[in-house]
Amino acid sequence: MKVFLIGGNGQVGKHMVNLLQESEKHELTAMVRSVEQAAQLKESGVKAVVADLEANVDELAEVMKGSDAVIFTAGSGGKTGPDKTLLVDLDGAVKSMEAAEKVGANRYLMVSAFKAEDRESWKDSPIKPYMVAKHYADRMLRESSLNYTIFGPGLLLNEPGTGKIDVNNNIKKTSISREDVARTVVAALDKENTYRKTIHLMSGECTIEKALNQIS
Ligand SMILES: NC(=O)c1ccc[n+]([C@@H]2O[C@H](COP(=O)([O-])OP(=O)(O)OC[C@H]3O[C@@H](n4cnc5c(N)ncnc54)[C@H](OP(=O)(O)O)[C@@H]3O)[C@@H](O)[C@H]2O)c1
Image (tube, rainbow, N blue to C red; front, side, top):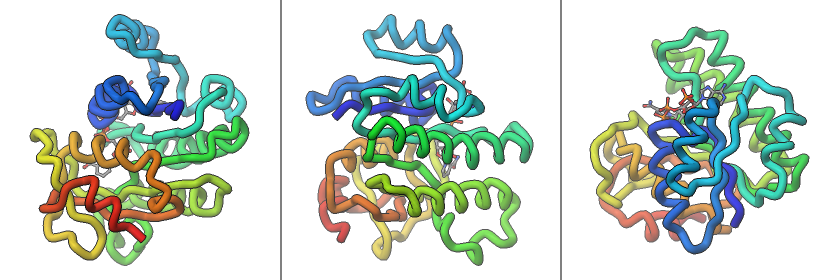
């Protein structure tokens, strides 16, 4: 699959870049925000394009042309205000979905947040504006024509991955390593049983392959 990765310079994104570069099944284009980031990726043989989620849909579609699948793992981060939450995590994400539809990249994998679909679960959260942005971006994705998979991981950690996860009703933990999120999303790219599904995701006890294959 020709995979277009949005957030290629992010912490989860960097793990995905490595996995997709190593993969024999996929061909990667990583989207980053600066020419310096793109140059660094190109030095290690990664195809990189420079674009910003605050650009318009046509500009995003232009760089996405020829892709089969889009992975969204960008985010405005905790250090910016609610304006960027709205512009990047919500509108940026939705514009990337519209761009994907426009270029016929009909597979779309979203790194969302745990239970973003359940307002009651974050009604008193200190990061409520972020959860609102994720909630509505995911809703737009469900209403799109795309073969989406929405991943809802808990707290993301920088510890090494274990390759073991739990999903949905099997979840016991509240966090997961960024490396395992990356592995799970990349492994799901061509799993049709994960199309049009929302998957809650935490560190756990099951191999990624087995956990994903059990999704129905
Ligand atoms: N932190 C958590 O515990 C948590 C929990 C659940 C879900 N998530 C979600 O998981 C995903 C990955 O998280 P992470 O920790 O890897 O995030 P991260 O390290 O902050 O990476 C986010 C990436 O998004 C890029 N970005 C920001 N604004 C952009 C824009 N306008 N246009 C294009 N790219 C832009 C950043 O670019 P630069 O490198 O240029 O800054 C960065 O590379 C995000 O969607 C996040 O919301 C996080």
